[in-house]
Length: 575
Image (cartoon, rainbow, N blue to C red):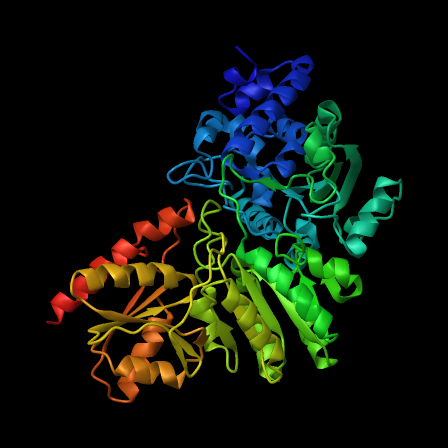
């Protein structure tokens, strides 16, 4: 029996004698290294908050006291101490444990906080509501991994002084994915070195610290001191990302921020293709610069940064600022490329619309992790951008089907000088190139069948599944054409004409059904009076659970077998 075997709730943590806590911390670290390296997930952030999480659960009484995590990828230890250790065998797998806090899993999880810089705003609202209700419940928000660089966090800090007794636990490991940049990072470094005049106190919050984030006794003392103040307070905890695991501590790039599951397939990814091509484009075009929101490596910009260090701008976890700063770069005559995960661009839609598009500025958005992303779950599936961005006036949106098209479309996007462009691709291996039969307008015809009874519009990487489906349908005596639109917004008139020549068109895409290309194509055909029946075959407009990309697509019929079934069903319905 180990100490961890006897932990099924925070009450068990509080019952341990202080002398047992270092051994518990060691057990948790061994547990995390074993389970996370096997299943995949966020390792470094959680190794860094072991003692901090133990102290939080000894001082505060979750779930009576409200404990919020920002960002949520540092909540694995919290999951362990709240009775979910046995569930780590299925971490981030379909039907298994989420990689982020999840209210569906446990009453100890209040929010699914997988997007950074939001917990302080949640805390502000919860504290105000509890105060109005006369409740004695305490509110604690753990902010770390660069989350405090986000503008929303500072909007919350500006209001917290009037909220009530919120304890803000600043997990200061000096990093997000890479070392945290900007003036805030410099200020925290000064505080770690003994500086005393704090921004937090200037905003009306008390300040406790800095405290060693790996000293459980010191942490407990600091947290009790903060709770006793009965006012908004920041507890500044200095931690080491990847603590206790030598490979992480020695990994200066990102301290093993996240690891892939054991046995995960390798191969060249879409991100790899983009990274190599944007570096080549940068060598050819001195006006091309790149912007990242604390994710230079994960979005593929390392090669560009190595060759052109002065032309990459890391603004921290601040997507809104990233987009409008890019607008400023464009106003001054450069062509910025904003590399961002699809799900995170949603945080800056207003800036895309009114700061970039309204001014018809040449900004290229490269949307990594578009479509179904897999094990990160509903907050990270990039299934909204292709439904939302087409409403932006003047924005051109591309979806490459293969590496050659990603390189081609990226160059076409960077060449646009009169408005914004976006290129989207998934989190997966890029695979082999898919040749076209011919090009019609901006579209590539991938298969032209004699006497075709239908047309499959294959959006981006759905091309392979559509071609496989077309082969199976042909074997069943149902010939169909396959076309890749390449640019999915605005609609190419050539695509509308091509679709109008078929009696059945099925648009296959891994985006939300609402606003998808299929619906826009049906509307365009209705305007010209075409009798064509158009079906949108996409993801339901719901928050989809975590699972592998293949599992999620298959569950919604977006594989070759599902496409065959849908085509046959639609033809039978309209025969």
